[in-house]
Image (tube, rainbow, N blue to C red; front, side, top):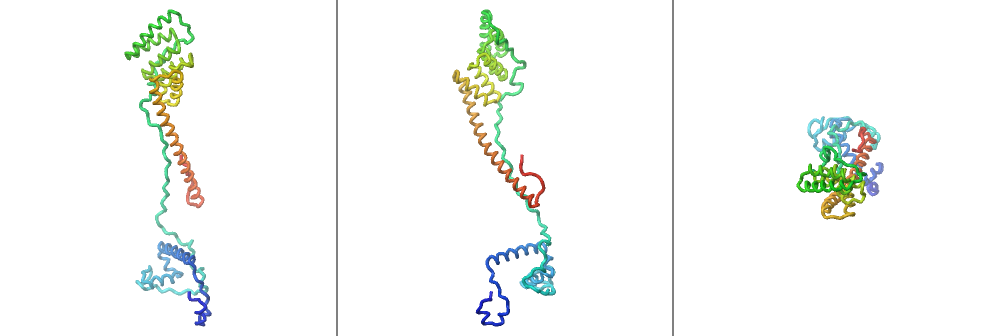
Length: 315
C-alpha cells in the first residue's frame, strides 16, 4: 500500500523491497471468503490453533485480548518456535483442508417433498341402487316375442292390462306384476314390455326395467318409451353417461314434460363431471411435473454421491 514511486525515491532503503501489489476488490472478497472458511473449520476443531503452522494466527488473536485454548491466560500466547520461512507466498506448510475433519454437526435436513395432489372423485350418491337390490329375486317372465296373438288373447290381455294399471295406481306391486306377466304372455309387444318396465322403475328394480326396455327395443328400435325407461333405469344405477344418451334419444322421438325433469338432473350431473374432469387434468399435469422434479433431484443427488437408490417418480 506504500509502494508509490515518490515514496521509493524519498526513501532509498525501500528500493530493495519487492513491490506490493495493490489488492483489488475481488482479491479482498476472495480473502474474506477464505478467512470465513478457515474460521468455520477452527470453530469445529479449536485444537488446531495449537498446530505450529497456526502460531501466527494464535498470537494475533491473543494480542487482541482473546482467550485461546492452550494459552496461559487472557492476553498471553503459548510460546511457539517460529518456523523458517523461505517463501512468504508459499502455503506448503499449511495443513491440507481436505485432511481436516469436518464439523460434527447435525445432518442437513431432508428437503421437504411436496406430495402429489389427490384427484377429485364423484361424491357418493346414496340414491344409486346396485347389487341384488337392483333386480327381482327371480327374473320376470319374458314371454315369446314371436307369438301371434289371437282375438281371444287380445280380449283377455286387455282385461289383465286394466287390472295391472289399477294395481299400479294403488301401489300393489305384486298384483301389478302378476297381471303384466299375463299381458306379456298373451300379447307380447314393444309397448307392453315398456309399460311393464315402467312398473319395475316404480318398484326401484332398474335391472328388471332394463330387461323389459331392451326387449321392447328389440321389437321396435324407435320405441320412445323403451328408451326413456332404460334411461331412467340407468339413472337409478348411476350410469349417467348412458342414461343421457337413452333419455335424449327418447325425447327426440317423443318429447314429454315428465321425462324433462329427469333429463335436467342428468345434464346437471354431466356438467359437474366435465368440470371435475377438467380440474383433474390440471392436477395430473401438476403431479407429473412434481414427479419429474423429484426424479431430477434424486439423480443429481446420486450423481454427487449423496444418495442411494430409489426413484423419485411416485405412484
